[in-house]
Length: 318
Image (cartoon, rainbow, N blue to C red; front, side, top):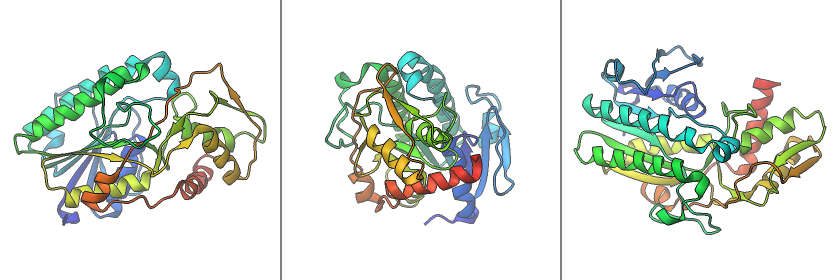
């Protein structure tokens, strides 16, 4: 078991979606929490120690990492489908440098536990849920090529460092995460956050969804991701673990949009714009390994998660 009050957790990317949720989650669990941000200083329910640092730069990082028991690496350059289609390179260089610097310094400062977030971009389009070992290099989709190999590089980098027995790593290939603190800026948001923002701000006027909506995606509420991290910290035995984490069933974008529309009670007219960028793939992942090793299971259904997210959005944006 983790002795919460004796463990120091440092969250990198504390101003981001996953980072903010990690800080709030572990504060509630009575851990000693601190965070690193780069541009916008975040605010939390309790006052914590915050460091402003460019994680591409190694200088000064070892001082921040000193006496840390658990490192949660949630810092990344991210954006939505528009950039993935038009500027796929922006997710590669910065993220590769950031993770190389972080992993090296974490090794040098001997941080015992490290949580790092991968994703599902390396998987081929499939209607059948894919397991962790069902990654086929020749089937990486062109728009995901750079981001996928960057993620694989980070996974293998962590696996390499884990072999020295100093750090224990958990790598999470999570599906599309949604919930409080998600990006709702239409220029940067993913499909879930963008749809919530469009519908909730529509004033019952027509809204536009990119593509025909037939592509399928896998969605998981942030609470289920937080619960997995907590279980992994308590139960992981090996020095390196790679885990899929997602919903037990994918959904088409069209059905997702309609579901959000109905649950919001807005009933906004919707059109699908076939001329806009879209990624015509089906993402399905198998989370059996996480369930088998840690007893993790999805607790927040998509319907319940949509309701929770809409309520949070109303309280914070409307």
